[in-house]
Image 1: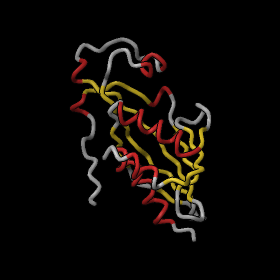
Image 2: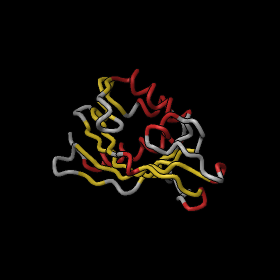
Image 3: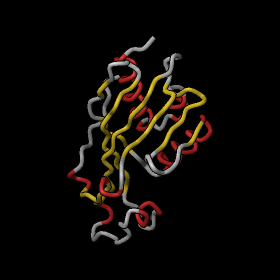
Image 4: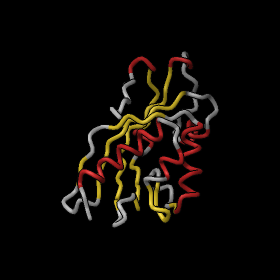
Length: 157
């Protein structure tokens, strides 16, 4: 049965489990046949094995996700969640070159990559996420001083 509160909660749980480095818990939120694309335009991928590999790579890179307020839909099956993703600045990271950020900042230790994006999830009849799309482009990524980005990612569990 569709439930607007439940799909919003699933989107938030995605972020919290990434932050907890809990890949098994993350996969438990998703249908085994999940289709996801992160970012949209990079090509869709399917299934738990692909999602596990994607999440493991993000967690190994040190990603932290700070969720905003989830917004539902009238069909109670989808939710959009604005997220600020934070990654430690690591010279030579392939993502930096792909985004045109290959020049090293003066204070590497004090820098962080900030990615502003919107994650859209859709829930299936089994109450699990069956589709996830993450919307961001090269203009949504920037280097910032670590002290200027939000640190709060508590989720009140």
